[in-house]
Structure formats: C-alpha cells, structure tokens
Image (tube, rainbow, N blue to C red; front, top):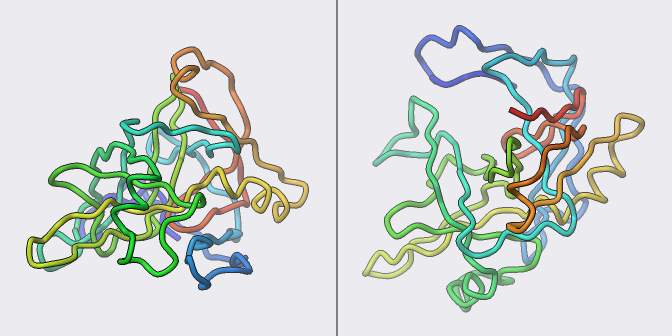
Length: 222
C-alpha cells in the first residue's frame, strides 16, 4: 500500500509504502444488494504522519448527510480512455437515498439500500478506477469519511448519468470495532446542525481506498 502518492509515474517525494499482513473481508461481501463492499487491512508496520500523509475521521453511527451536503471524492479514475496519472478530486453533493433508489429502480439488482450513500453533480461523477476511493465531508476543522466509492452507471442512448454510489461508512461502525481488537478506533458523528461548532480531538482509525488500515489510528483537527 502506498501513502502520500499523487503521481502514478512521476515523482512522489513524500510517498511511503507498507506491505499488508492481514485482510478481513466483510462476511456478506458479494451478495445482493451488494452493499457489504468493505474490508479491513492490517499493515505490516505503522505509517508516520506528515503534512502529506494525514488520517481521516470515520462517520459514526447516527451520522446524517442531508441531500446537498458537499462531499469530495478522490481517486485514479479514467479520464477518457485511461486511468489518470495524477490523483483527481471532485465535489459531488449528496443525493437522498429515496432519489437514488428511484434512479436505480429496475436498473440495479437489489436496488439501493440504507448501507449505501449517493452523490451526483450535473456533469461530474466517479469513473472506472475510482472504486474504493474515499468520499469525505468537512465538519469544522475535521474531514469525515462518509463513503467508499462503488460505482456510477450510464444507461441508455441519452447517456443519462445516474448518481454515484458509495458504501455508507457509518453503517459499519459495529463491524469495524468488533474486528479491531485492543486498538479501538473512534468515530465522529456528522450532521449539518452541529458541523460548524465541533472542536474535539478524537481517535478514529485511518481509512484509505476500499479498505481500512488498522495498524495505526488517529484523527487530527486542522
């Protein structure tokens, strides 16, 4: 696993890497409605934090991401035909689950469940190659991860863009904590009413890509 990488082929002066010692896949992964697309990854050793390698907080159970909540997604998704050489980001406002369910009704086997969260912009979405990337929203001085990228569909001759679909991280707090042993993470509850006055320093684990490295854990305020 690589940390601090921004270029696939260019220079990455602040990059560091670790091997993986263990992977824990959710026991219901791969079953309809395909909303258990999440795994934990234990690193071979801890990763030092820096100005370029910073952990993200995890959305706690009970978090509410209302429709329109600004969310940022990053990844190496394809630009035209090939994956991007440079790490990309895009702002995609949250779409309500009811609207997302309607959009995918009859299109997606199993439909949209409460274990998913959706986002959409008129002319932007996640792309092939972005799967596993984080979706985050800001709460005061903290960045909180709400989702893990799954897919976005383009169906029909009109190239209609459906909402981008993500795993809803807050739904998996119990599962994550049950697999963490003594190195328990903390979680930050997100909602629009309280996001501007939050100033606590908590201790959740770092979540990166489609899995959660859990050799180290810390959540910092900036």
